[in-house]
Image (tube, helix red, strand yellow):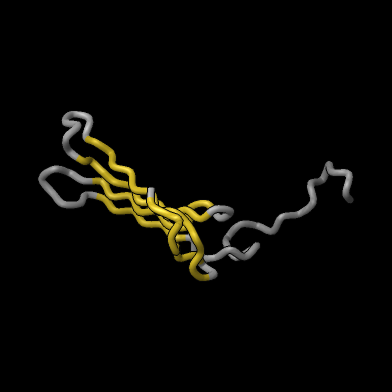
Length: 90
């Protein structure tokens, strides 16, 4: 883990941490079968993650990258939060 250092978020840079995890091959622990790089900002959690899976005879077999792009309530495909029907606050 490295940090605190500037990490990109949807609202600009914030102090965060970069964590790199190496996943070893089950058949040969000397080989790296994959890596996960995560950029974590306190109070926001993970704002960026990239997973790379390797196969020994190839450089990269799979690369999955995800990035937090919005932090506004209702900015994604999720429905708006309403009152719970059984709550006392009606």
